[in-house]
Length: 300
Image (cartoon, rainbow, N blue to C red; front, side, top):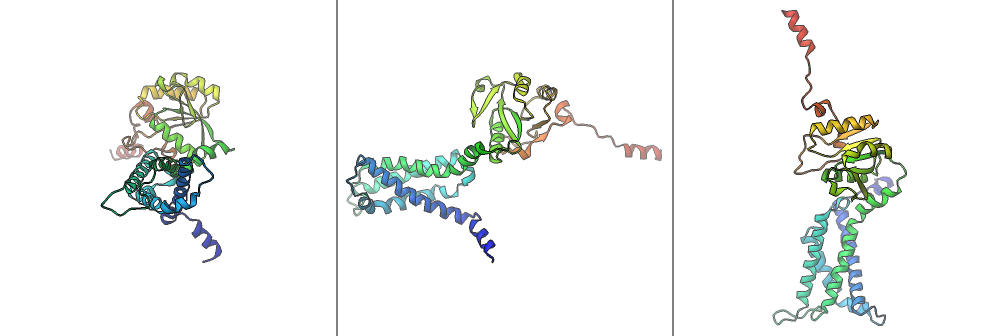
């Protein structure tokens, strides 16, 4: 294997490498969390030998927390797509770990005394809060960078796009735009007929109004593309929106596919379709078999 192949092997991501990375990172963060907890407990005093105090109990915190993370499958989290469920699992894992550490700190006549016995409960509380901040922060860091920080740096912008529908489908379309660095589309805003959403923001993109102001928004913002992310939009409304966009000279009009599992949505930009005649008129286009008719006439 050449030097180039060796480098690619080292850099290439794998489940083992990702797990080892997070385990070692978590150990460092656990140490930092405990240190912060001690400094808070002793009111930021500089006269305390923190390393000496931590040395007695540090191993307990590391082992218990790593076991809790394994039980709650924290190391199965996909770094790039970490979500709310993953963060909730992280919270439960830390609560479980801190409660177990508290139990180990309680004096009892059945088990031998641990170094944790009689440990101040305040340290556990502060440690849990700080650990959550560090551990969860590490998990969301990649997504935060790719979807929030990096997109602010992009000079190349795609077509100025308006997204119709500020629901789950529209939010998924926006997230996919962010993942791609807004290379093909650059969202300028949402439109949604739910007036309670008007003026709100989804990942930093504003809901500008209802579909009634579609033409004004297109003209005012020089919209080049429109993405219809309203799965159950009726055909009359769809035709009105399509006609309005075409009248305002919008070149690109995309729509989420009609045949779609909306109970388990996983929509992205690649799944979008151009609006077809069937979408607008509400029935399938009849394909005439001219060759078959011609052959039939000849045989007759």
